[in-house]
Amino acid sequence: MINFIVHEAVLVSAFLVLWFLAFFCLLPVGLGEVDPQTGAPLHPYLGRKALIATAIAVVLWIAFYALIALHIVDL
Image (cartoon, rainbow, N blue to C red; front, side, top):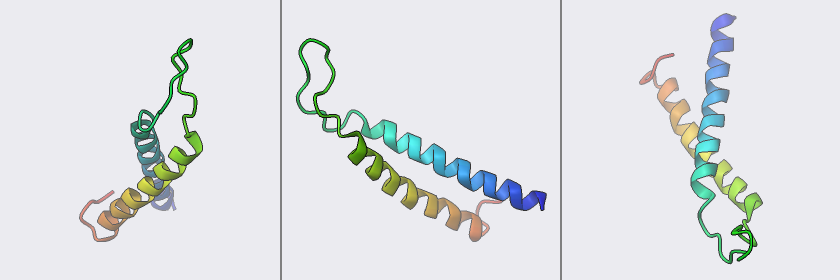
């Protein structure tokens, strides 16, 4: 039972790390116009970037899970 809990915790935490890494890498992409007074982007498109980060994280997580399922990486 404990092995199952550890396995699930590793998979969930790996997905979260991959998502945040992808999201923070996407933040400076496509900022467009910037407000001259504040320096902040006028249209940061955070929702779109979150969806793209989710897609990237899913692909990387599937590759990570395949490495575990094929016993290339052992927990």
